[in-house]
Image (cartoon, rainbow, N blue to C red; front, side, top):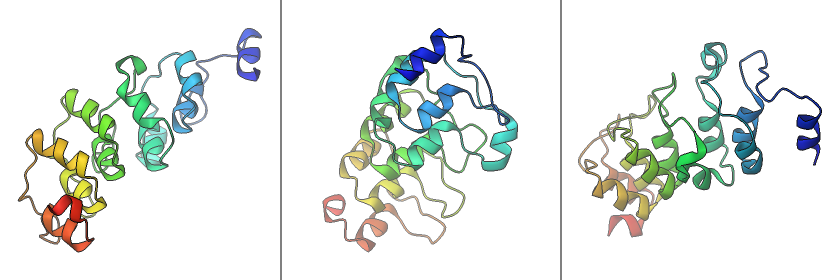
Length: 173
């Protein structure tokens, strides 16, 4: 294929653009898992890019709902950074819980990422986001790992209130 053809003909797999992004970053963002496996692991992207958006490739991939994200993150050999980067308001854990990516949530928790992170806008916890979006399996996993059911967001709403607000009967039961 074209990718392999370029590599065989001397294309630099570690080349960086103006913001420090490498071919692997672009492959991660767009969910091209076969390319991610073939490319060398990336250093953290430069502070120039994060200064503009505060999003890592992982954040962007999760935000865009790219197919294969859960599979990629569930693989311990994927070398994906599960930490916050510079954006503490939207950690990979918050993205994964909001999007119902149970396997991703499990891997993030196994890597010691704390449950007490909250987004900057609504001050919601991972449990609050999972409850609001109706992701019962993710809610169960978070509770099993010690998530606080009484923690309130900026509007003083608990995860149960948020689930009731959206009619998430599977979560409320």
